[in-house]
Image (cartoon, rainbow, N blue to C red; front, side, top):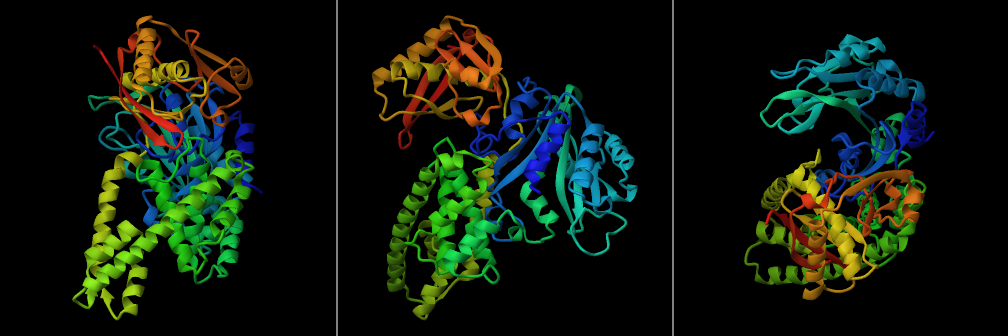
Length: 586
């Protein structure tokens, strides 16, 4: 039984339409570097846009979370994971959602009812306790003792501070131990593992702090694929499940090491190469760099190289290629871009490996310099951390090299600096990784529409070979990446700006149509990620110059946009340029 296939089949039988997985790099959501949950690509529809597939949706979504990067190596954490989700957009609500969940778990997956427990929202000064969910669970045979009422930090989404759609959730737990199941559910007992979360978005949190009922109530659910497979197969180590078997077998073969005794390094290599393959295969064209998604990709590849060295793998060999190919073979049935972009993936891994080996050589030279100047017996924490942060030296390598020369390393001081570095990274990245509903306000809507005008203007001025490669929108500005092999001249930038402003001044209506995807493509509609769209799509047209597949939101008329101005034009990556622009009332 394949959990992904069974999940889709079940919810399709309940009137849901399957939608394709969105790319791992989100469009128009500046709050995150990657899609961190199945709901993120559906934000416009949770905010009120009508989905071309109707009100009941189901999918499996590629997700990447990097806020727990330093936890990778244990039994349960992953950077890339798949989220199974089903949605009701203003259709059914708590009672039906809970009924579907219990039916799937007990009748399709054959999990004994006695091994399940749930949490529900206990209420606070503003919102009452979620008795409706509790009663629904009881009606399906969950005992009262197995229902725990929890506070807003556990059972409210996204949180009580966020303005916009929100609501309570109910989380489903599975008793993962072979021991006797306790009569009373204790959420603090680690033997209970969360497997599914049903979010009931029924309120709008208003600017004045009040909560009012939404005219349309939504259900947003999420089930972690890797975690549930491990549970169904009865393994406490996620990496021992069938999800990882072929990848880990390949690592064991190329390293000539067994999994037992080398778990941490093998898990890190398996996780990091798998995630790197999905990032590098994404149509957004991410390459290793020192910023944003490129920085994460570089960090993942380099960390896997360090652990490959630790296992005694010959770094000059094709070890990374072999592991990547096993990932591609395992997942290309579900994600065709892996096979389509296989050569790109392998080139990214190879190129970064060569660069990192050069960096390690520089690090060895730097280490020798430090040793020559060292008057004491101990290498200080600053030098140890610089070797780690600048040259990628794990502390174990520094200790080993220093030991060969009869010197020690201030490991305690290094750990303090490392911890401070982690805290700083977490603080700086909170906005990038938090997830949740991105801004869907008036300015974001204007900028979203402006990207269509900019795309059309670039194609007229620069050439028909220009295609959108990505965008990032906030309420203050827009960023637009596009394929182009040269830096735009001042004349080209002026022409693009004038053309966009001409279309704005002409006050052209923005038209919205729904049609089959193939028909939309034949009609000449532009599209960034064709595979992410369902068979029925929404097409936005502006005059006779812009026609794009898009999820919205958009203004009704170009006259609403104001004045368009290009602030900066620069390189983004090889063959990709980036424009930053603003809209003003001037």
